[in-house]
Length: 285
Picture 1 (cartoon, helix red, strand yellow):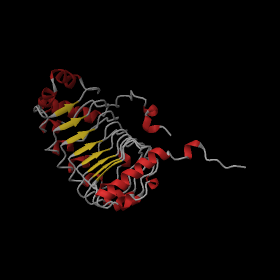
Picture 2: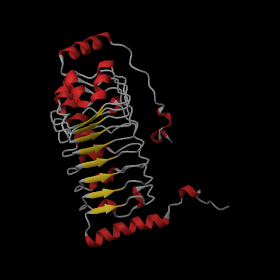
Picture 3: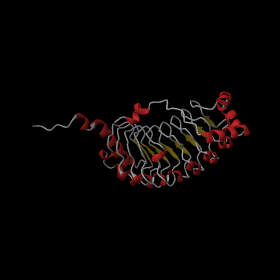
Picture 4: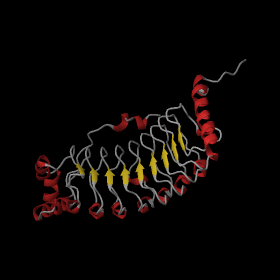
């Protein structure tokens, strides 16, 4: 009786040999940048020699079928850019945040439901992209908001209802994307992000904004403030029709501060969820 492997278990040897070839060539010429985009890779363990390339600074593994990220990835101690976008990753290893030189980490378009403990320990991380996963405020590790080197944080297309007030600790943040979540409230501490130049809050369940957001420099030509697709109180909706700068002016007014205070005291029920997220690709088994 023959024990044949099911088709799904047989590695795609054509594409795997391409990956192996990339590694061998990199070793030969000491190439610090490894491009393994769309190579049909389902496991990094299938790529011999990858974790011994300690000189590499950039590793691109996007558009594959990777479900597990081995802890050994942290051996690549010179890595500055790691792209794991568009895979099937459900969890990340604790060791990842020990990479001493990592500046850019892209794990967007995956299936993450949580982040490992200590995830905020990255010493020099500047850009973190976690767009289109299954994350919410309850799964952020305690030290998430100590990454004071962070310049851009992309959390769009997740399941956040609240943004923790500790967001105000990220003093160097210039871009914050929370679009297409379930946000029903954002904290006053957003107003502490003096360097913020892009704020994406479109497609949530927001009704009011803290007046402190009016102090941010989000009205210049190079700034971006996206607020559409929410459930704004009529005065904010009216100002939004005139443009984001009008909203910011209104948020600074005494009239609005009174309205905001009354709204927060009344604690009305949040708007209903309007998007069925059970069909998201990130939820698929």
